[in-house]
Picture 1: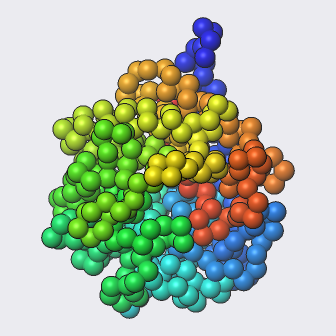
Picture 2: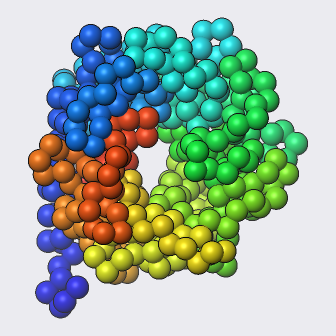
Picture 3: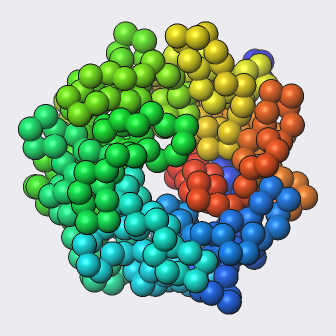
Amino acid sequence: MDNSFNSDDLLNSYKNEMSAEMGNILDYWINHIIDEKDGGFFGRIDGDNAVVHGAPKGSVLNARILWSFSAANNLKPNTQYLLTADRAYQYLIEHFIDKNFGGVYWTVDHAGNKLDTKKQVYASAFTIYALSEYYKASKNPEVLWQAVELFKLLVDKSFDSNKTGYLEAFTEDWQPIGDLRLSAKDANEKKTMNTHLHVLEAYTNLYRFWPDQSLKHQIVLLINNFLDHFIDAEKGQLNLFYDEDWNLRSTLVSYGHDIEASWLLLEAAEVIGDKSAFEKLKKLAISISEATIEGLDTDGGLWYEYEPAEDHLHKQKHWWVQAEAMVGFFNTWQISGDEKYLNLSWKSWQFVKNKILDKVHGEWFWGIDEHDQPMPGEDKAGLWKCPYHNTRACIEIIRRAG
């Protein structure tokens, strides 16, 4: 920025714009996603803003709706937000929770009948994350108990007591499964950075309301998994895929996950009061942010992924990657005092406003392609397109801007 840059003015503008944008995002979901006929929320809205009737409904989408509306209500109480959270909670408990074997179904059909019964640890993690936030909003002790029971189940069924870490996925009755992947683009490996990051995120949120020593122990182990395996301290980047014995299976760089991890790891150490880990992770957050700058385009947008083995840059700018850049760079400014990171966070938001916001229908496009156009064929809402990353970015900036 030029010499006229004033961080106080920027922070005030940033906070006000995030407050308005959070309202815009959540209004979109209230107005477009509620399924009055079959209950809960529609499973998919396409890129042209049309509901895809009969589409499966995903546990991750439902849990992220529950978290988003609970967190927004917890930031500033809002009756409509709480009612939407209530709806998400009731549907989640009634349709996605497996009453026989425990855990969370990956999908149900449009009418709420179980469909893909695979136990993806990622989905259970987001359910813990959402239930913890909803407990704060609802003050219902049963909700906290449900989150704790899911935590205990994950430790029992997924935690590797020999080499630590969490195994990726299981069958409906928690037996080994051949296809462990979250999506078709992922490597079929037993331990992934993505799932571990969101298990950590879930456990951190649960610890705020249930500061149990067994939970703290798991959070410490997860932080150590990142320090020992996932973070390449020399490069300032995170490794994504490992086998069961912690042998690295990929060189892919995910800029969005890197910058997201930089602040979520620091938050986890802070919540459990681990000062030693906090200091280590603070230094790493700065080095990760520096490495992430390599993935920024001149317009402030952050590219999706880079494959160094092929020197191939995936020239897409996904909505969630920009949201995490906003928070991650802001966090790095807070811990370093270097205003260039605040500038980068603000520039990320300017890119979102210019290219990612759907100014016709509302919400954010899935992303922008290499031709600077909205990516064709991608959802506005779906199994992965949820209000979580962008709502959370708004909430984090509002809180941090003071």
